[in-house]
Image (tube, rainbow, N blue to C red; front, side):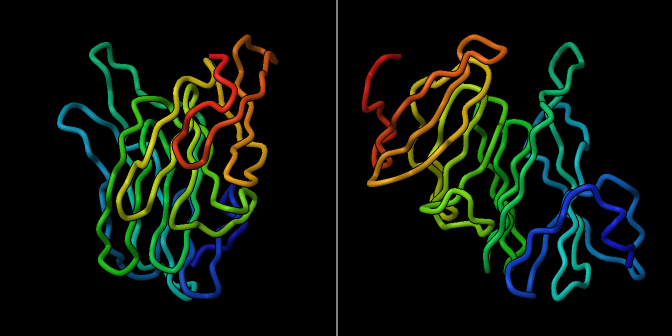
Length: 203
């Protein structure tokens, strides 16, 4: 198998069972492995990302992520992409979707966020590198609370116009910042973790 140095991102590991990584170079497995297309679109789409899934460091499948092409031929994507996993699920963030890959059934659930994705935050420790069953996703405009089984729990009102980051989660409160006046015009906000409502309703 090709060495880890060929890939631009460090693999995300949970014990020694599964790993997942976005590929930025050609990958040639020693033996054929299944390919799964993640293409939830009924109209034009284009393959844009590949994700290698390994079990015990052996390649088991290659995921191809597609993005939508609009009527003018533009790809509906931005530069952000992230990947986190736990024992049973792998969350892939790209384009305007969160894709949830089940490591047991190999089924994929795609959640459309109607906005370009930004970042993925596990709970309660947002800096953890292990996917939690319920997690936060930020887009250019919004914050979402998502469950790996039931999907989107809530979507906040608009938090920004050009990017949302989460700084901390404590005592059922989400502390974040939204960029309202780019570049650099960030404003803090607080959301209820239970409801997604602004605690200080200023927007």
